[in-house]
Length: 219
Ligand code: AMP
Image (cartoon, rainbow, N blue to C red; front, side, top):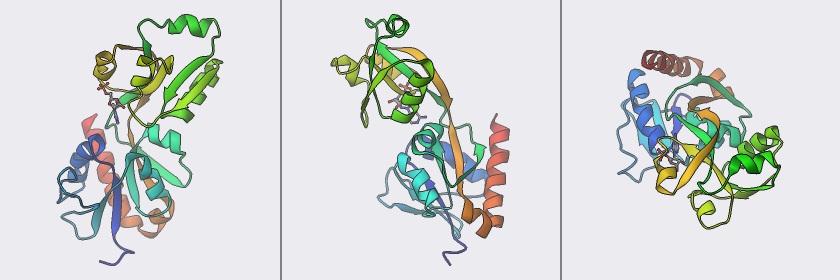
């Protein structure tokens, strides 16, 4: 298959991959390998002209931006952190839905601290989202960048609060944390490389339209 006619889709393992499979099916595309079992990073599909790249969630916008992939699926959280320069965003796919929230220990009076204008220590991997949110509230924060397990930081006294994704709330509950404020709703978006959209207009349009129809049918 000629690279110019090959369509490459970047996905991350886990929730987004699982929830994208029905959308791909609606577009007549079936992924032939299971990324949880295979170590392959390029997965074949039933269509010789379509392949799937398995990349880190935070790398999906980068692959699409630089043309390593023609299109990708990524959370709004990742897009806000990464920036969306050079990315066409035609669809909110309404998958991997969750929210990004502020959480704190039950014995930390977040509302009073905010009211009194205290300076808060906030641990998060979402520094851009957290910075914008607290700036818009006029709250002074010292942000501590972490790459995972944010829930630990308040428990060991390293932070007053965290900013993280919340879905069922079970992770917060298991770590004795309380969701004290919701920042925004999150879902996954389709992102498309703008140059690819011109060069491979027909096959990309077919996929985008099938995804749009499948998303509309689900909601
Ligand atoms: P939950 O216990 O259901 O509230 O899920 C919270 C944990 O799952 C946190 O560690 C989040 O970072 C992660 N999480 C929740 N929803 C998503 C999502 N849509 N995409 C990626 N991670 C998520």
